[in-house]
Image (cartoon, rainbow, N blue to C red; front, side, top):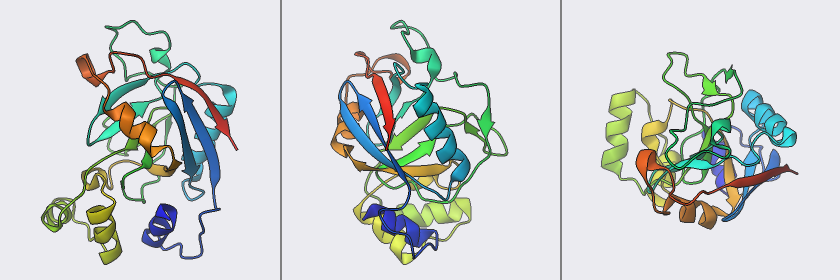
Length: 209
């Protein structure tokens, strides 16, 4: 259902919920199934490649913020000590931006460092939890970013929720189709320095269907 709404935003009215590849992120807190968008070809193909290579196995959700997102994919998080700063690791390359879809609740997006081209990290990703938005907030985002939300986009943000402040800044390349309760539970775990969970939340494997 959510994918059909995102497809509408992108002008892809012929898309169905069966389009795209699915992957299951297996964690020590439960499974999260995601749909990867065919429109963001570079990001989707890279995620599939890394998943099949076992790149993510043993990595952590190293940064979690309630009402915002949960972030993972740093290879330096494998076996990291409790006080080790994380979030700067990657496979040694970046991915050109493929910005389009909005940051609705459950969106799967690529993290990045500040750069004018908005290139994405080669491996780090986040899943949006977000919050229900108001017309006033969306009006402010439109004014600040110089964008125009459609009626459908506004309705989605006001009912499903998300983080419109991230729109046009990061590439969304998929969405959660099941296991959002697992994502929400991860977002609420007790955190220490740098918003890292005090008890490791581990990606055990990512299986591409």
